[in-house]
Length: 520
Image 1: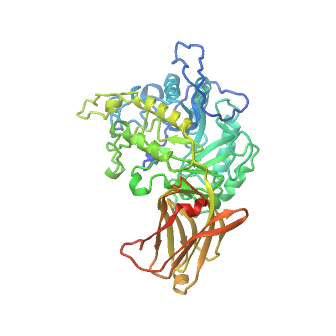
Image 2: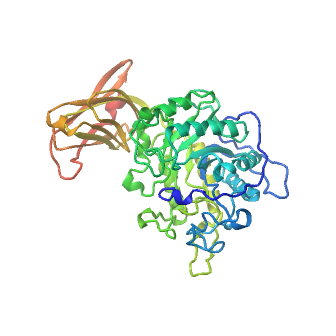
Image 3: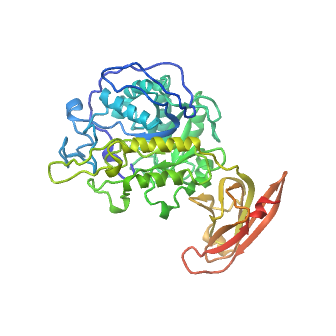
């Protein structure tokens, strides 16, 4: 999903086998239970056994696969005509189930049995519009979801005709057609914009564009659509694919997700979660690996699996920023073209033409299922630090400036208390607080300012906080930090930076003893 979107979209017509549509009242999310469920045996399908899954862990799921036996076409296994399924497929890996059809009941049942073994309680199903192949298989997903205790949420993709208005219409359509199924995911958890009970969950891929082929859109493009969706009788939780925390306020998103981050060091990892305002969902997406060599992805997208070490690192970092996720998403259960799947893959298998498919090596064909179950349990057992409220004021006469908490603790959940009208941007960009104005205003000596309510956590009483301040080569930046005593903010530290240091970010480092924030 990182690059290859349009080529993976189901386009050809096929007949989906008829399956019954489930009905019934909505279900609410629940914490992971250690109880065990046993469903009567159906000789045609894998049994339903084992601990109940967690509805706080979801996997992106791709129901766009077709094969010649059931659908009369190999899509996207053949990636148009470049490969020759069933032995030669458009993937660096080869599924244990072979190049299957997403419309095959036994395939979906096996997928959901595997998800249950991994203790993953939710799939986020790729959805390309009303009447599309990925829409027509939804009744089958709901049928098997009800059987295996797996809930279904929706990943609204940026098809060519997607707009803000079509997004509202799609949410209404999904509620009307699928919202009564017991397997339709619903949550009682509130967000900054949606506080009602029993809401559906929708993920908005590529929130910086309306459609796949469209131009980038301005922040605020989605706000009217979000307001309409939140005003529906069911309301909704909409999680947007962006790591810009300011979009929560500007577009009224309920939360943010990153989908895939290959280079955690270069991108700041999951530090973007610190910039999500209080009341919005932090939904980190973790990767087991990424490999799409056979379909021509550039080498920089490659992420080696390292016998599960990459997966462990992504999970640990996603859970380690001091903020409790409302949900963790796995990228992915079965995105075979991009090689990000945790679905079992064949070992020691070749295409008969000289290519030996990659494997999970020492982890084994089904190893990621059990590795995932371990991390789901750790997530369930983990506790998070109690945040300490504070206030941060940043002012500058430069055209741009930022503040980054480099070490000594975590800061999180900013909420803008006030901001200058002349500021062109104020908010978190990744792991840094940024404040910008036009170059003309900076050259004229104009000052802009932002004040945020923010929380600190994981402070060492004997340590110190290390801040980095970056700034353009014009003017000066001033920072002041306050603790909240009763209703009154009390200043505990102030810094200013007006010099020039080597490097494009013009950095200076300032330190504040943690005890000043913690007090006596």
